[in-house]
Amino acid sequence: MVNILRNSTPILKLVRWPNLIIVAITQILVRQCLLVPLLKRAYMEPQLPVGGFILLVAATVLITAGGYTINDYFDRKIDRVNRPDNLIVGTLIYPRYAMAYHLIFTISGVILGTWAAILANQLYLALVFIMVSGLLWFYSTIYKREFLLGNIIVALLTGFVPFLVLLFELPLLARAYGVDVHLIIHLLMIWVPGFSLFAFLLNLAREVIKDSEDFEGDRAYGKKTIPVIWGMGAARWIVVTINACIIALLMAAWFWFVRDTITLLYFSVTLIIPLLIVSAMLVRGRSKMMFHRVSTWMKVLMIFGLGYMTVANLIMNHLK
Picture 1 (cartoon, rainbow, N blue to C red):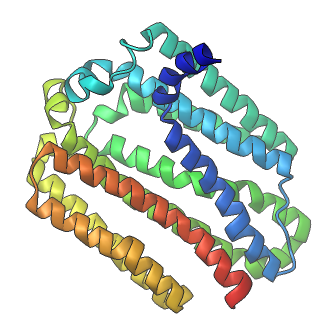
Picture 2 (picture 1 turned 60 degrees about the vertical axis):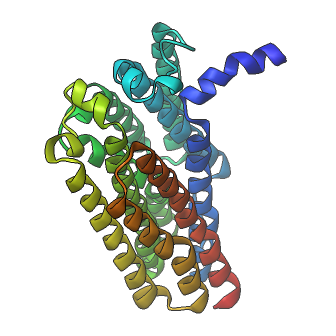
């Protein structure tokens, strides 16, 4: 048992296991804390079987793991400069093994995703997993070296994680309830894409921060990141601007859609004030350590943002 744990530790580090847990929890929260209570209002319920949903989550997690693996495989030279103490591929794991793990994770994810699409009687949705897998490959090999394109792709894929749950449900709901689904569709298309937009913007900001943290290695190997092309100062102010947009959207969401005290307190304490603190750190700071701290803060804010789903569920079920 000890040997098994010791041998699996590098693989768990390679696939960023805490991030994979966040991916799985995100999709579970979307189904249980958003779709279930919203559909309950219209006397409906989710139509994707539990088994199909489990396959959907597993497919998303596996393809994400494959994406992390192939990214580290192609980034091992740059990581020797940017993160020499955290280098995995080439030190803890042979490169050819990393490629094998990528293929295993990705192919398994596509198979499970196709199985979920079959259970949903919507086989065309299997194309989503094939396209995302291909996009992750081309991101690691080509797109991440292009100016801004790589950042946008990663942010879009992050925002797609919660939306994928709704994407599988919509055709099933339309088939089960017909025109009656229009009674609730507008709420579904506000809540779930709202979280997707939040995840997209916050991850976009974090990607720019990580590029600032990795400035030296990226510049040495010719990556066209925002800090390399426009400078560190421009990168910091771009993140501050994105943070300001997130704060404005949070306040707009509260004013137009929720308008309750619990939401206002949650947004203020866990998101808005921390975003202001992070922005102040970026304006005043310059060191690589500061960028690392801000990157960690942004990950925590992502968790708090997704955690609002539990608050929304409480409001919808007990306080409305």
